[in-house]
Length: 223
Image (tube, rainbow, N blue to C red; front, side):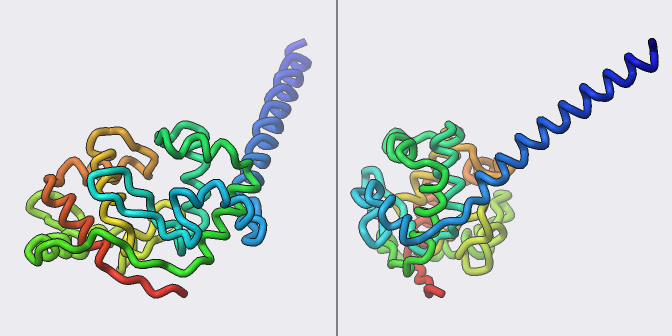
C-alpha cells in the first residue's frame, strides 16, 4: 500500500510539473512571438496620435510628454506594452491603447518602431552649467551622493542595452524627467531590482532637470 501511495504521489507531482512546464513554454512562446514590421505599421495606427507617424513622440514643457519610440529596442517596447496591459506599469493614457493590442500586434508594433530612424529629441536647450551637471551624471555619476552614471546600465553612449535598459540619449527631456519623478515617488517600478527607484531617490530636482536636458541634447546615429 505504501508503494502504491508513493507511486500515486509521484504521478501527481510529475503531472503537476508537466502542467507547469507546459504553462511556462506557452508563456515563453507568447513573449517570443516574431514581429512583422508591415503588420506593425497597420497596428500602430492607434499609437500615432501621441507618438507621431515617424515615432518621434512629443516634448510638452509643463505637461505630459510622449516618448520617442523610433529606433528603440523591440524587446523593450514589447515589454512595456505588456507591463501596461498587466498592470506592472501605470499610465492612464497608455492603458486603453495597450489593451487594444493582442500579443502578436505588440510584437509587430515593437518591430515596426525599432526599425524606424532615430529622431532628434526636444527640451535640451538649457543653460551651460546645467548641461555640464547633466553630462556628469550621465557619464560619470556623482559618487559623493551615491548616484551611479546613466551609462552604467544604459550603455556607453546611453543608447540602450537590451530589453531592460532603453536608449535614453536623444529622448525628450520632458519624458525622461517625468519618469525619474515617477520612480522617485514609487509610481513606477517595472525595472530590474528597483535600480531606477534607488538612483532617482538620490537625485535633486536640479539633477533630474540637468540629466534630462543633457540626454535630450545628444544625437544618436541610426544603424
